[in-house]
Length: 116
Image (cartoon, rainbow, N blue to C red; front, side, top):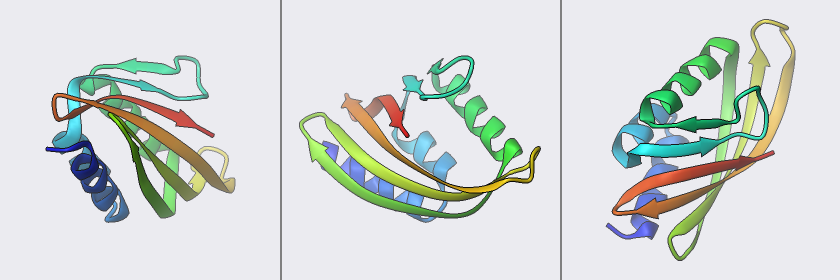
């Protein structure tokens, strides 16, 4: 599978709100994920990345997501996300914008970095 096919497949699933399906289909078991915020910004391995996702959905109510891209360059691609969310503990609603850079190796996403 080409990087472009993986990128488009990921974007299509994210646009449909199927983020866990996207992880299951396209992420390597050894993925490394880097977030710009938090006490531990680096998650290593699919279990840690899924746990981070579970934490996210426990703490944020997602009202809508706009996904743009992908933009491919070699073994990497970029996807844009705009999320309308409410932080459950505080009740604060906000719009979050971020870009993610994904790296592909052996037909799987092996690295993701988020920029806010």
